[in-house]
Length: 430
Ligand code: UD1
Image (cartoon, rainbow, N blue to C red; front, side, top):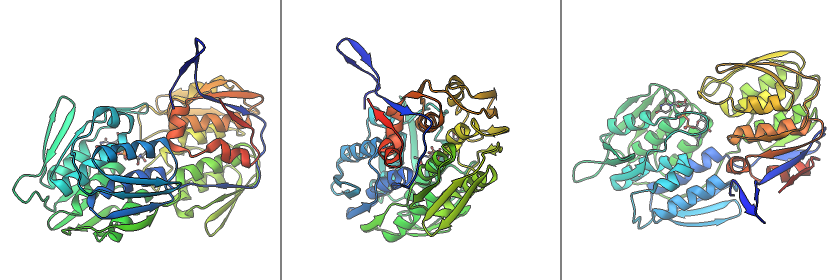
């Protein structure tokens, strides 16, 4: 979706009109996890057999990854939520900047390309709206596995020396538990010679989903989901059929939608342990939560201010910080919200203030004094999760808000307005 278009000489920015004072009811359905699906698609490069992924969400980020894989010569068929991928006859090991710039996750291809073909050429993704986002840990891990890495003109050229073009197992200790670095090193190590280990590995559920897929493909990965992952290299991987896990961040966004509109809702399918920190904070601020297998029933009472600090998993996820701040803007009392993962993830504060929120920002800490009602305003979501936060704030505000930033929103939420409208919201897309 373009950020802005010119229609009859006037600039038009795609936006949503969100009716406030909304009450939701019924059930909200959670799609497959974006962050899992993206890395699982990259893992398809590790075999020439066919990989079938089910429960893939329909998102612009997924389309971006499809385009990237097609550029490399991969055969892809996409029907509804199923993607069939076959990385046979790869004719390219290089990705163009235009594609990598749009989708940072395309950097994931470096590990599988190196492991399978012994070379890869990928532009450095650079920073984005929320921070600098270096890839030094990814590079450090690949070097430890024996790759030669060269940086020139903003491009990383990676190759495996020797005639066998095979990486060799290594012990990697990450300086920070980076999700992307853990995934890159894991995908590179599965086809390496000998044993590898990743210490201080990220423990996010997406890592487990990737390890589960890789093991289904014939890899030997253990310990994923904990701080140390061990990988016994194998010579070949095979295709398989795999279902992407539910999106814990979309589920968390829907839980906060229920809380901010003070609505009783069922949300499914979810894996409850993936949301432990979020559910605890929702309970602390006054929501009654019942878990029945893969469904959460949320029944908010009076919402009061609670403090949150974002942390790597199993801590409170940075990706729900903006949505939770929208909720706290409507709570009784004060809450202190501290962002610890990204250096620039507070752009939504100014937008919430424009809706009447009372927030003092000191560096990466926001002190939020809840107000009785937010008021509708034209607002802009400057990144994916801020855009979601703007929708949530608008649902609870007095009046009709105009929410821009749909180019960000559509990267990570599949048909969000349709889903919310089915539960009683009144949101129109223009
Ligand atoms: C992934 C998620 C993103 C989520 C983030 C943290 C995907 C596609 N995206 O991003 O939605 O917000 O995890 O949960 O899965 N860092 C370094 N050096 C490195 C790598 C990272 O300092 O080499 C820092 C980053 O700048 C950031 C922090 O570590 O401050 C977390 O980054 P990382 O875990 O790598 O996030 P991503 O994998 O990019």
